[in-house]
Image (tube, rainbow, N blue to C red; front, side, top):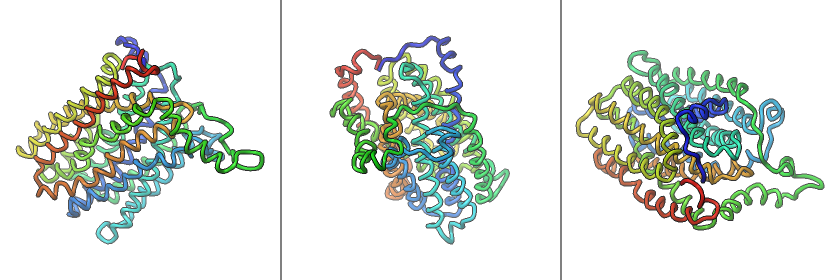
Length: 450
C-alpha cells in the first residue's frame, strides 16, 4: 500500500484536479438522500410525538445500504440503453437512481405519517434502495477516475468524497432542510420535501458536467447472454461469483476475513450515536433551528474542512496509524455527548462537542475510505467496493436501527447510552492491529507505507 509523503505544495497540486471536484459533487449526491429518509423524517416524526423505538426502527430502510453488494455486479456488467452513450457506465446508473430518489422524495411530501406510517416507510424505502444503488456507481466512479499509479491521490479523493457527503447531508442540504422546517421559517415538513425534490432534479442536470470515465471491465460480459455467447450459468459465475473469489485469492483468507470483520465493527458506536443524535438534541432542549445551525451547518462544514486535513495526515503517517488514532479519538468524543446529557442544552458545549466529534469522524472516515479502496480490484470496482461498504453499513443502518430500543431499555439514560457507544470501537481497534501485522508480511503490501 505504497503512498508518497506529500509536501504542502504537492497537496495543492493534488487538489488542483477537476476529477477531485467531480468526486466532491458526487459525494454531495451520496450524502443528500440521508436527510430525506433520515434527518428530516426523524424530526418530522419527533414533532408528531412518535416513540424513540418507532423512529429508530424506521431507520431499518437503511438496510438497503448493507445489501447493495448483492446487486452491485449488475452495475459493473449491465449497460443502460441510450444513457450509456450520453453519459457513461457509472453516470448513467447514477442518473436513473436520482430519478427514483426524486419520485420517493415527492411521495413523502404527499403522505400523512399519522394516517399511514407504513406508506411513509415505503416511500423512504424507495429512496434508500435508489440511494444505495447510486452509491455503488458513485464509489466505482471515484476509484475508476484515478489511474492505478495515482495511489498518493487516494486520500484526497476520499477527502473529497467525505467533504461532499457532509455538504449534502450537513452544511448545505441538511442545514437548508432544517432551516426551512425550523422555528424561524416555519415551513411544514411536506413542503420542505417538495423543495428537496427540486434539488434532486438539479443534481441530474449537474451529472452532465462531470468527465467521462473508462470502465475497466471485461467486454465479453456486457450483453453476454444469447446465441454463441456465454451460458446463463457461466455469466452468473463471472458476474456474481468471480468478484468475491478474486478478492479472497488476491489477499488471502486471513487478511480478507480480518478486513471484513474490521469494516463491520469500526463505526458501530458512531452509527448508534448518529441514529439517535437528533432525538437526543430535541429531548435535552435544543430547538430545530439550533440543531440545524450547529449539527448540520457548523458540523457539516467543519467535517468537510477536516477531511482534507485528515488526508494530509494520512498520506504522511500511514493509513493504519491514521485509522487507529482516528478510532480512539472518535470513541473519546462520544463521552462529550455523555457530558451534554448531564449539563443540558449548553450551546458552547454543543459547539465544542461537534467540532471535536467532526474532526475525529473526518480523520477516521478519510483513512477508512482510502484503506478500503486500496483492496478493490479495477476489474470488479463496483462489486468489491460495494461489498466492503455494505458490511460497514450493516452496522451503520441495520444494527443501529435498534438504538432507539436501547435508549428505551435504559429508561432514557443517555449518559450510559453514550458510554456504551464509546466502548464499541475496542474490538475494531484490536482487529486493526492484527490486520496490520498480516499486511506487513504479505508480498503485495510489505513494501508499502501502511
